[in-house]
Length: 422
View 1 (cartoon, rainbow, N blue to C red):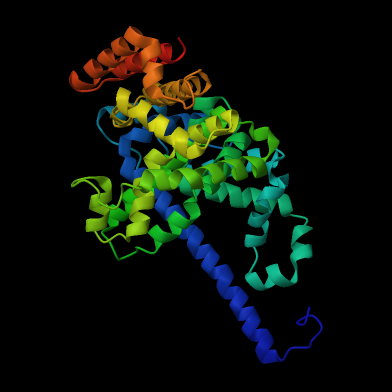
View 2: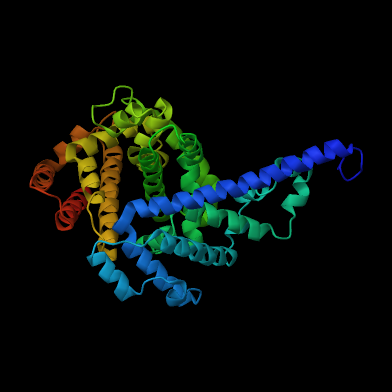
């Protein structure tokens, strides 16, 4: 207002304008950095995402926005031949796919009601320089391109952080529409506090080896995909972001200290030990290293809300169940399978989801059963007797019986699911 009223000197006005110009330039550079990072992450995954990338290209063709031949992208036949030869998409090809994924997602978001969610208002404000946010807040909130700005911000966040095939992959896994996938993405970022973690990893530029920094980003990307899938399967996202974020962020705040408590003296050779040895700050190293365990906090929080029991109490029971049936080993075996087939990758994700569902079902059964004054996993084992022993013996045999295969892991997940619901 002071600028418009002419109450500031020319020098002061120029200082403000230069400051805003620099902010806009910085925002552009950040977006460029994140796009380059998305390409590097896709490159580092190699053939693992080839099936999802192929499916994305098919979807884009069906939408009528992509001509593979015109853009120099391989046909299905050419890509299949590449996969057999162990060759993935090149970086220029990944860049083309990234841009078309953004075009498609932005269209889907504008056709939905998601840009109208009041919880996403911070995306609108963040589009403008700080000075404008302070002085023109009401004008910004009433901006005629409000929906387009929010949709663009969401699109950049999802594709830059999750990758070009992030949305199509989760569509196929869960059956939800793109806008719903993005809603779950926004919830996952907030509940896992990923913005703070990403800022910490960004600050490691030139401080640690580039390959290690990329591994840190990859760990956050994996956690983001898992948590997004969880929200899609387990919550009613149509109710809006506000309540979901508040509930699960509060539960995660109670759960996080429980899984980081043993991180001060990590075992030699563990992920955390490697990060610390490479010079990653201790707090950041712990926060990244526990992300694969932190996802269980959503199941624990959900059961705590249903049963009105403390998160800490249920977290201990949940950990007991996992340790007894060696579920972390099963999950890591499943996620570590080197599979390129699109449907095999979906099957792996389904198997991991079944294991988590079974662990949660056992937890609920323990809490709801008449075990006396306190819920007890030992009492649950007594009640299930030989069935639990047989399931454990079978799982041990699958885990210890040689190299894991998709078939073995699928059988293991089915056995635990049957026991959990018996």
